[in-house]
Image 1 (cartoon, rainbow, N blue to C red):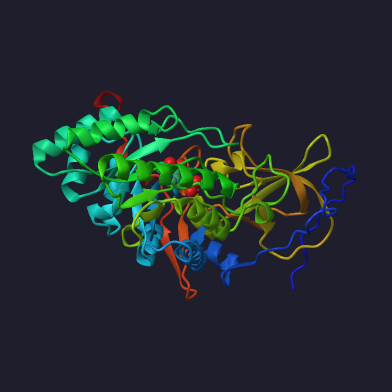
Image 2: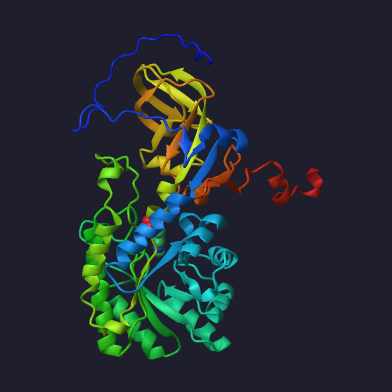
Length: 448
Ligand SMILES: Cc1ncc(COP(=O)(O)O)c(C=O)c1O
């Protein structure tokens, strides 16, 4: 057994203030393995930093979500929110479980096709749908969630030109108690704009209205907010049926369920504060019970859950580069992964633990990334054991949005691997290399 590296003793001012109502603190426990695979082996094979996804957790979360709703409502569809994580392996895994795709750009639409979706298995949201991409989508039967009336007019024109009736849904926004409204997307319900738009769409007679949609926000920890949304959407569906004789084929409640992360503004840890899927399902299915539809023709309930499906399955392994002591006595760690890879560090208190056994006292520690930027704080001060250069850390619950919104800034982006449900490890994205720039950068002849 090798001796631990010598570390010079220091006197540290004792800082009180890390208490919560459950006592002093949750202890820090190491995570040496991810689904049975040693963190040390993963780094030896694929380098550090390294994103790791657990296939088992992805499958479990998907099953939990689907079953929570399918137990309460007869027709349920999950449309995987591509922007949350569009690594092809992740998308294919969800599609294999039965998910369709939810996309918000031509790039994401193309990616969904590449991941095996047919155009009619795609819900297309968002405020930007250029004509050429719309044409392909309409021709293939993609479900277009209209953002406004200008878009409706374009969809009608293209439908007419190519001789295919588009299948459309109207996205609505609405007031929800206790939530700030996302009024920039879709047509407003309370002002009557949504109903006017639907009247105009039906009167135009050139496209088929097949659904309605609302996405009320993200990381919403109050299931009751969804209860209100479902109740309002059910009332709108009833009105569409009464006014226009149209039975919708789906009602889409969007995404936004909270993952088990902890917001910086949050008192309790995410594991305690974020509701299970069953509570969202209760609220939504209670709201949909107001639907005045024949039982056999109830619309499919569509969910575009993103972060709550994938966040818990993602890990970021990082390596300690250096220890420092700040003037106020806090320990600072410099690690090899920065906020360009983990931009969610800006608003989450990420759960980070050592990847090897440790001893000694915990002390207030702040974690800085490798960027030469003051904003590169990966974890605000927390109680943490002493670490030495070369030690590994594991950030948990980082699977949502990071590997789509990460930036190639100062450093190259690292590899991503998946640990399969059977323990196999496969790389699902290779680390970037300098030559990747050679493929996309050009130097004018006069500067060569
Ligand atoms: C229309 C739409 N659907 C689904 C999602 C996924 O949301 P979340 O990751 O919070 O579940 C988003 C995210 O912003 C969205 O805009």
